[in-house]
Length: 99
Length: 468
Image 1 (tube, chains in turn yellow, purple):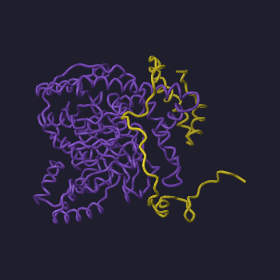
Image 2 (cartoon, each protein chain N blue to C red; image 1 turned 180 degrees about the vertical axis):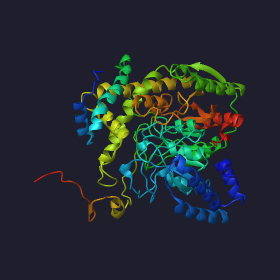
Image 3 (cartoon, rainbow over the protein chains, first blue to last red; image 1 turned 120 degrees about the vertical axis):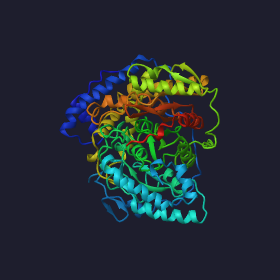
Image 4 (cartoon, chains in turn blue, cyan; image 1 turned 30 degrees about the vertical axis):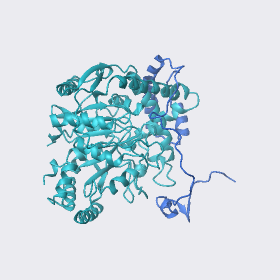
């Protein structure tokens, strides 16, 4: 694994990717904590895994399908019941595209 | 009725024989919660009104002669199970005011079986933690020693059952979150095979690892509970079509002659001496019952924690991306430390330039870890190991050092990586602090795990020793 030293700049970049607003305290503490955790991962370098197929599941279950039939779902009042900002039967979000 | 000594099975008998009503039973638990929970903090929400209403309905059905496996039995849900009309927070301020509009499949099944929801239990926020300390709703205390942690992330469920505030509680186990608090609180904690129990409607942590389990006082209760929650669900495509076992009726089948492996890698450096001795005593007990013990090796064990702490935060960062405060809940500024740390870590290992070195590498080593288990289960029927390397630790002892906290999961994450089932069963006390024995088996061997744990429990009865 590459050198896993995480800088404050890295953290700022990552928080931007993850849409997280970090506090100054976070920015001070996360570089060291994350670097230590990444250091711990280096033990995996001892293993040669060139010939190994990665797995994401373990029970061997594959490609379960169901009929493509429309069914009754939650009504829009229910779906919107937890939204803090709504308009008629829509969620209100910040503008994604600008004029 | 001494509610402290009740199990689900005994409570059911009491209800059937009309020794007490569901209303009396429910009220007794609500009273216990009122008396104890200001100190222990096992609950986020207590559903007094709903519970009493359901108890009334339950009593009516009992009177009519209706038979259901949990009719009139009050239970508790970890607060990451969606409960229709009842606030569900995952112990995070992000979901402080979230009221689900549907039930998780497990909630639905348990309610259909007649269970009553007493309340929603505290936990590590988003199930991120091994101690219960990351909850945004305050730390849960270990009933055996209030200065110590109950284990996490199913901290509230374990404490509710352990201290007699509930008969059973659901939990989720992504890296040990049912087994570890089970061990620390002297209750039975089951992590079923991946896909045995539906994940639908349960707030996702790491989707390829999440297993839906429960905590009970006894093994027989655990078997009864699984016979209700297990089975295929069309809303979770990873649930298995394999038939659900007859867990309860097989408990008493003999265990003589079974071959059990002791994986040597689980007994090396880092294991507390007292824990090691107690686990050895448990193994000796099984030998007396005619079980054959042999040492085995799972050579990739030492890599498991690194693999787990790459895969799990990667999946966490993806699962928590949906919390934007638009459809429900509050904005991302409400995430606390541990969630932020895991989102950052996962975002890093999945980011361009690092994905291959970290995430792909971890998925490959995961294959090796699974293969270790496949191979060892050709030789032995099940494995005995410690649950945790230490006894319940002090509140605050590990909070400043995340890596140290992560090491608490070292003996439990392997089962999640391999997708196999595991059970933690009470194995005694050191200085009045409880600890469990972990039994691991091949995929869909819950039946066997229950049998082994049941025979051991019948002989030792550690579950009878309550916290004062």
